[in-house]
Image (cartoon, rainbow, N blue to C red):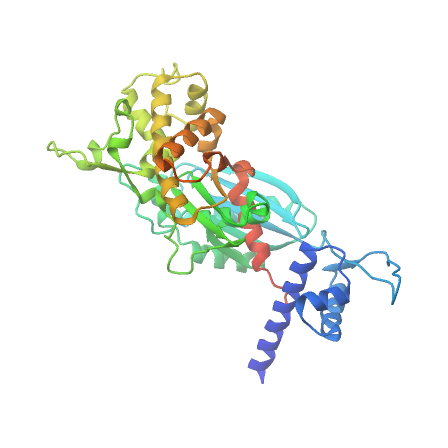
Length: 414
């Protein structure tokens, strides 16, 4: 008997969540219209609506007189009943974005991760961030979403130590501990899945039913939206979409770039490989590593006179000033990305390819270079390279998607 009651409560919560999503997408629906959309009886729809009104998840608007029948009582989401927090954990920062029940962005925040933070300290660090952010909003958190790069993804030995730490982060245990500490459901996604959710609900996915999102950050990954639905990776298949592991033919790259693979091959004069991983050229750490090696103690427009570590900001500024070394490496990144985009276009023929991540900070000149490389790769294939664009969501695109994913999976507590 107890099992039957639990199943019934779960089914009711599922229907209520479905009803809330319907009202969220179509504000002002009446009970009768909800019943028709959900294919429920009027009594069943009224039952769910009454429960949600009682718990203040829904609000009623002013009655609307109609030519025939009873006045229409429109229903709306109560935006102030609660909010959803999305946390995007990358190599250097924890980015946060908070959405209310109406999907309005309440605030965005960035917290630096101290250097050499061990895995066992990450849960406490996240708890401190969440506790601090609770003071930024009046409504309580109804759900929290965590997004991280693909766990268990093999990280090249020359990548920063922090990437090694993220690749072994026990995210499922951290989500469970945070859920117990804050008494709310905590879900976790890969960064690229979260980006897909963000694009569907807030970005270009609102206008295009078939698109590909590419995240070029600590790794290079892609997610696909087909007929308005995210082709999400299931448990055990989280590494799908890791296009940064695709091997770009070396002969495509500018000869002056000097792609460095010696430290990977080891000593002994081994021959350099004929292919290079896309992420070694187009990820943030890949670009900084390549340019840093090419500098050999020199400077990017004088920015390494004191031999400080090269940053993405340095690269962006030098690229804008026309630094020839940075320009060559940016062209190599564009070539590698264009090669990967060409494969994705030939496979899916998307309406739009959306590029997100710090590489988009290189601006319109880089985008035009990328489009030119895509046109060269596709030849006479009928696809317009102008359909490659930067994401409209900016730096917090993954955090927004993580919050949207939490909202999407949320169910009323019954």
